[in-house]
Amino acid sequence: MASSDVARQMVNIIPVIAKADTISKSELHKFKIKIMSELVSNGVQIYQFPIDDETVAQINTIMNGHLPFAVVGSTEEVNVGNKMVKARQYPWGVVQVENENHCDFVKLREMLICVNMEDLREQTHTRHYELYRRCKLEEMGFKDTDPESKPVSLQQTYEAKRQEFVGELQRREEEMRQQFVQRVKEKEAELKEAERELQSRFEQLKRLHMEERNKLEEKRKTLEDDISSFGKRKAATELLQAQSLNANIKKDKDRKK
Image (cartoon, rainbow, N blue to C red; front, top):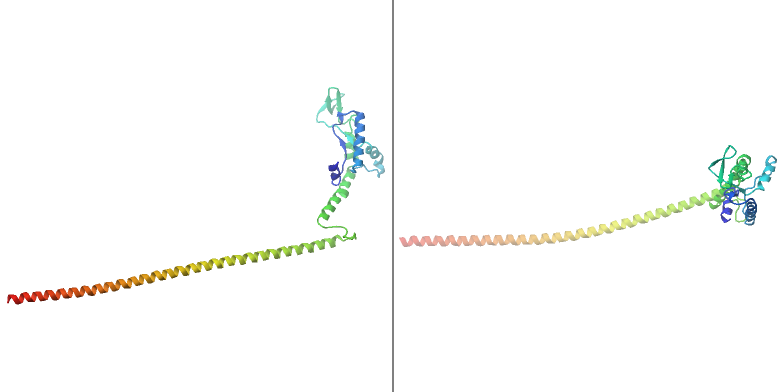
């Protein structure tokens, strides 16, 4: 019943009893009365065939008394009186789908397709669709009345919602812009910090390079001084050796004389 109460707000409810051939006529009559009683006691509104049109008022009044329709379905065809009909075959007999003495399928078909099709369409459009549209508009904030129950123009409500949406959009855009600016600033700070670290590293390497260069320069000067000193000592030694040799040669000559 709870699901039926929800469904009645969305669709036209026409109660039917399926597999009506499983119970006797007397039981079926009592079952119909019980169903209608429970629908009424639970406040479930079903589709009533209209009786305001004189052309269909009489038949619709009669058909409203047959609710809920007891129907039987079958996809099999059975030979009944030299005629193939849709029916259900049982050992004790045949239940014909389109026999009004066996079930209400023909009544249901006639009421829905032949007699009340236009009214069903109108009910769906003017009642259920409009109710659905109204509920959706109310969910979006569009109402016919203000908190004081005074009528409100839909155009005014729309304009107020539009302004609210525009304001919210601008607020979100400003938040996104601020977030973007903040992220840019944070990135710039990270890049500057990385640049400072690179510059500090560069200065450190440069200082180490200059220190190594100065050490090498000092070693080069020391080596050059050592080479120069060694050259001078070598020249002096060679000079002394030459003088000593010349002196010895002169002595030898003097002895020979």
